[in-house]
Image (cartoon, rainbow, N blue to C red; front, top):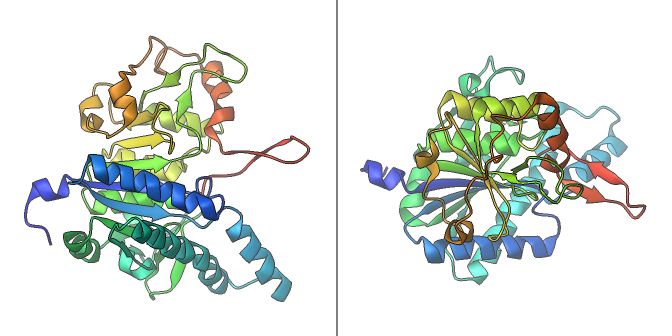
Length: 316
């Protein structure tokens, strides 16, 4: 295990969900993002949590139900997990193509375990523990470790899913266990906005939120981040960063207090160099409840069908 706190302070946990990994080419785009990060900040140690490619989980569930109308939970979780394991392997290979040493890990190696009395409706910080020993040993040898999101193991060492948005929770739990300096949730939207920018050209990105404000968004229907993940990050004062893969877009930071920006003030990004600052209305503090509720449109992955109807899918 690394022997100094400074070593741990260089650990960053990133989460790449299905809204990012939308097709085979998306894995290369994600690898380029990681490569660029390592080029500009070679001292960072990255733990990358990945979801299955978009649509894979639903496809696997349909396949299971063709065999058994009510598939056994353990069997379904095991089948689902093949999607995340595939993502781990493909991203590792894409990074290898850039001559980046990345360690692909399986669910057990990630070190998350749900306790015997674990309940999906409870705060996972109390029912899921992280044994970071394996990840620490990997990070001593490699700049990048890639782990499957959405899953942990139970008291009998069986694979179990963590619910919708479980990859967000995976990232937060690993960041807490590793004492990471922050947790970056990479989304297909760059964060929170004061209103719908497609309808309001004056809409501004919200660069800073408190956990209380993020939870209020969740209570008003926003599923950008799994609520359990926000609660868990709040309980251990873990700074969260919500951003996209595009370095020229803004990002949102969630911290325990409005004055805690210093906790995330070293986020590598071209956005920092552009000098983007929080606008006068770039916080939710002075917004009315109705205005906050109106923001939820762009806090969810956006997918258009051929009929141009908007489908909203829960976070994964």
